[in-house]
Amino acid sequence: MDLFVFVSGYILGSFAGATVGVLTWLVYGTINPYGFNFPTLIATCIGESLYGIFGGVLSKSGFGIAKSTAIAEKEFWETNFKMGVVGFLLTFVYDFFTNIVTGIVFGASLVPYIIAGVPFAIVHEVSNFFFFFFGCSVLINAIKKTGILGR
Image (cartoon, rainbow, N blue to C red; front, side, top):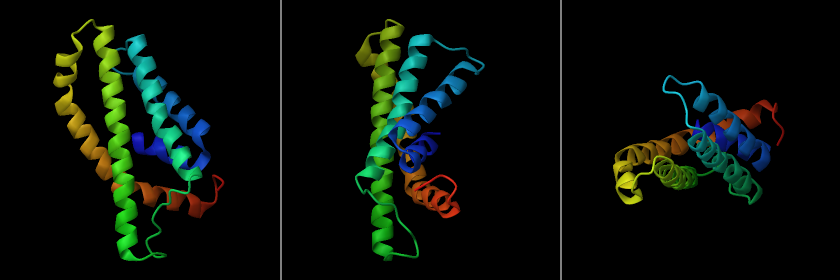
């Protein structure tokens, strides 16, 4: 869902992207079989909104996406790599922030709690690198091509 929140911010702007991030977690975080913890839900809503905010910021800054047929192959791969790095870094911030908040909420010692979260964080960050690398340009170009959502 991180990629979809980022793309919504990239296409519709930071506010809309942040809103999609918060609403996504309000649904996902409350309707799940394990229940929810309110402070953790707030943290995940804030963390997820960062994807939408930065999607909008990068779009406004001119941080382009690859159009496979319109640019050289080297530029295509470089642009997709940059999007992958953006996905990785945003996910690192998200994981670090939510692990700290969850550790505080449950009264755990932070350093061991963060270390315990490292295996999931690595999987989350690496997988988001690939989701952003392979999916970001494709989704943005497909949405723009339809002309349904503005820019």
